[in-house]
Image (tube, rainbow, N blue to C red; front, side):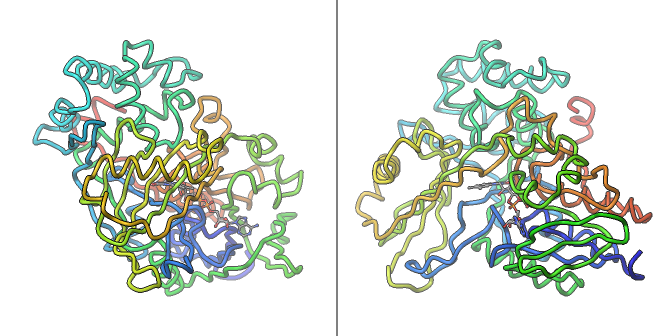
Length: 466
Ligand SMILES: Cc1cc2nc3c(=O)[nH]c(=O)nc-3n(C[C@H](O)[C@H](O)[C@H](O)COP(=O)(O)OP(=O)(O)OC[C@H]3O[C@@H](n4cnc5c(N)ncnc54)[C@H](O)[C@@H]3O)c2cc1C
């Protein structure tokens, strides 16, 4: 041990790295975070839009009631009051009729059954199909062979093309950011069990009321009060873990920082840039990680001269625009925009073949076709942002390749939404990975502690679903 207070260096100031820092500092460990960019938050971050003169999130980020570790992290960092809970999820069919997903008074796992039964964009026969498949999905924990996609499973369980596209596809593409042809049965089952069945608030949306950047300002402030040192614009060039007495990182420019343990919390494609061949060999499936497949997400930002969207958010069925959010407009700025809205298109590979203007036209058609009041609003500014490596694709073959947070080197650890967390690549997965990495570090220091929150289940669902 280098000093009386153990020192841990964390590479990467995304949610995984920040969650690890929060957990370690609460256990009396001195944590230092080094982030390459000027802003914290990584993929769940914001940028300063010079035209709109406001912080703009790269993409709208949404948490759900089942994301208990992300909620725990927000409580620890004093940001939980910056979210609004939305117990109702609104779906708007191609005919403009709205269906709402809201918990009834029935006990879990049946609490959403009445809402599902009244989905107007499905026929009564299709609703029965959904109910029956949901029951089978929930009760088949051992499931089909591990290489089965949810698309294959749904086809084998009598789901029509329409019901797959309008219900299963809509929910799963939003939750997993991947198409049902590519998503594993196991990942899809997790979405429906945790979000729809395990307990009555699993599906409740938690949407930040401020740009994500404001959350990171508060997180950085709270962590620094807890003794965490955060350095941004600090590009880590390499990690050294040669012996327990020679462990640390080297920054661009050659400065080295010694510590007792390193947590590498960078995206999976960046890991090999930081580790030597020997270190990478100590990571489970280390050599294969760079090639793990990703899924893209696109976000269309629209600024209108007047209120255009009458609801805070809505899922659109059978449209290119999957999920529309109304965001707080800029407080000032040259555009005089009165409305800022974000349209999310997950698994957006098909957009690559189209021009940005074509995509804009279709998104505007979706909005104007859905809300007649938007037709008079003038578009002042727009942006289309696509992140190609938005998330790790939840393909069946990927699950086994995700490494644990501990490596074969006793003081080298990993965190990130792509590590083995039991969760898909999400903010919840990232925070879980940070907590798990902190737990493994503390194990290695001989001071075990537990941070990961148990998955919420009611008395009944604990017995029925695992
Ligand atoms: C467009 C989009 C929409 C999404 N929507 C949602 C959503 O609605 N809900 C949800 O739950 N999840 C969503 N996600 C997923 C979520 O953003 C991620 O799962 C999560 O943010 C990953 O966090 P992370 O810390 O594991 O990785 P990252 O956020 O990628 O953080 C890694 C950090 O490491 C830094 N870094 C890399 N190399 C170095 C280096 N050499 N030195 C120092 N620092 C380095 C990076 O700059 C980055 O800040 C979305 C993702 C995207 C891209």
